[in-house]
Length: 192
Ligand code: HEC
Image 1 (tube, rainbow, N blue to C red):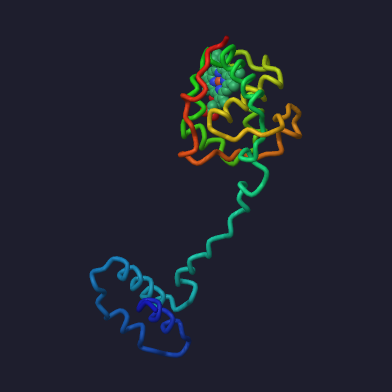
Image 2 (cartoon, rainbow, N blue to C red):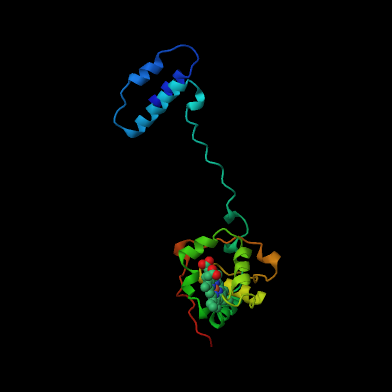
């Protein structure tokens, strides 16, 4: 046990005791952490109550269950054909303003990580293309989003990502580890 802690406990006892004086006389070694502990002990003596003692460090709260354990984008939630259609949407509409890099950069990935797929879907649906929001069909938004998934190396699967709210909302966004992301240079293809 650390010296400061023991002194504080003894000083808090209701019976008369000279331990508090000893703590006050004791010269702390020139170590900041120890000094801080001694100062806390002395203040505990002055007020004589346990309340002035520092609260014990709280146990780290058990975090929420990881979203990686729930249905998420690592589960193969779109098809290759769908991402190909998304590439066409990108070339025809998004590329006017966006680079592929916009959707593979760490800041973008961090912003959406562990949010629901629906949240990103809806963000695009409601706000893009900038200056002409509401002009994209649900299919275009879903396809463009799966292209973003493909750019980041998310595995394709056997079923397309849906276009109705419920099925889009089934998944959390989890990105692959940095080493498993191909980066923006993958699948560079001009419109045929
Ligand atoms: C006319 C220009 C323009 C077009 C076309 C456009 N965007 Fe955007 N987009 C922007 C601008 C500007 C922003 C950032 C400003 C904002 O937050 O509204 C943005 C932001 C975004 C973001 C948010 C990125 C982030 O950092 O979180 C996504 C996703 C996105 N666009 C997707 C698309 C998709 C998909 C298309 C094509 C279907 C598209 N955009 C077409 C201008 C455009």
